[in-house]
Image: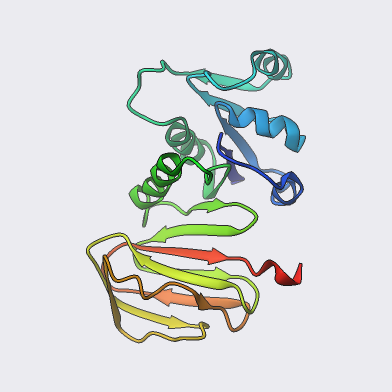
Length: 215
């Protein structure tokens, strides 16, 4: 089953970097105005979903002529456009679901997307990415790939996350407990190409900040 790639309508600065993350065979879904990003990235989405208040109208006509499917929702709805895109991604494609354009200056939109990751933790592998950051939320275990020196931050999303054990990080943890309001899991580091993180209870947000100093 093809990997799902969602292009949301948040901030994309480095289009070249994002273009290189798109793999042949990806099932591409644009959340409304994410289609404007898709045009700059040079890809034609398989599906555009949302209330269509952000997509360039001329682009919508052009994409429809190319066979792109549109699913329109009323503006007064209970889901965000990105949330709808995730539903279609999981129904039509598979894991992982990569979300680009989901991190940006609108903190409310970014946090809404983080809440989506939390809602699907343990059910699906959703990943928020940009050229600096990879963000995931899990309910028990996670493997993080990267390069030595990449910073890894572990933050609890529930009142307590317990039984945290890590391998492959500079400051290792053994059966640790994280609590909201005490973010001492910030800015750990990969010592190799992979870190393994397990925990017994709670939702844990894992953020990888890419070491760009050697690019």
